[in-house]
Amino acid sequence: MKTAVIYDDIYLKHDLPTHPENSLRLKYFLKSLPEFDFPVLKPEAVSYELLKVIHSENYIEEAKLSCKEYAPGFFDPDTYYNEYTYDAAIFAAGAVEKGVELLLKGDYEAVFCAVRPPGHHAERDRAMGFCIFNNVAVGAVKALLSGLERVFIVDFDAHHGNGTQHTFYTNPQVFYFSTHQYPFYPGTGSEKENNDHILNVPMAEGSGDLEYRKAYGEIYREAIRRFKPEIILVSAGYDLHRDDPLTGLEVTDEGIRFIIEQLLLSSKELSVPILFTLEGGYNLYALERCGRITFELLQSL
Ligand SMILES: [Zn+2]
Image (tube, rainbow, N blue to C red):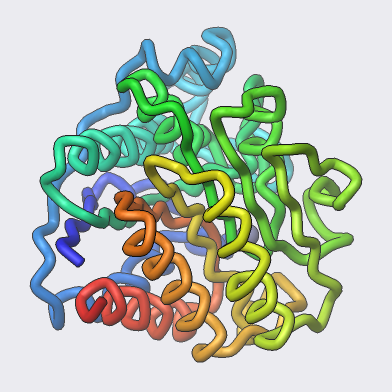
């Protein structure tokens, strides 16, 4: 697929080496990138008007002030900030905004936003779970404001994307499909929360390739065929890998390959563009392998 990667060094400056969500994650994820010939594009800061649709102005200003005046510190017990965090966060959201723009122009068939901090836990009024602004939600709103009517978000991170689900809970133009360990952090994501455009597929601790084959080979494929989206946005969190230190799932390299392949095949089948944005993943060696698997499939399909 004709693919671009969006990346900026600012993502490495939001950092706390003793924290699992540190800059080495992104370095390892991108280690294999030079083996591929994708253009690497620079993001711009997210437009304030767009960010304001998803987050309250109070929260955006408070996040900025904390980073610029009071860094370092913590927004919640999990979510640190330093003097660069606000900039990294607005360029992470901006990468997804730019990625959607490029896809809608038809310049590329696929875009991978290699960003930090991640986004899917960020709520309207607060940072949460290592996330400051909801990057994938920015992409969905950008697509809707550009005139699309049906956006499909797939979230394969091991944690449920509470922020994404809440953002679009009453908006039937956005379908949210999530597989995640459950019960687990952040506590949301049960089947009881499903409606006609929210489809949570909770996974018991210990679930692995077999369960994910059913989820992505059957449940996901059927849901996306029925919804007929005009774009697919992926919250790509690689902490579902069996080697991840923070989670309890058993998905192997081959399981990850199967999931990414299903996502790309559905994009081809429906002839719609696909954008990935990096969420979690905390084992550096697994991240390196997952990066290579993802780039290989983007190059070969
Ligand atoms: Zn996660």
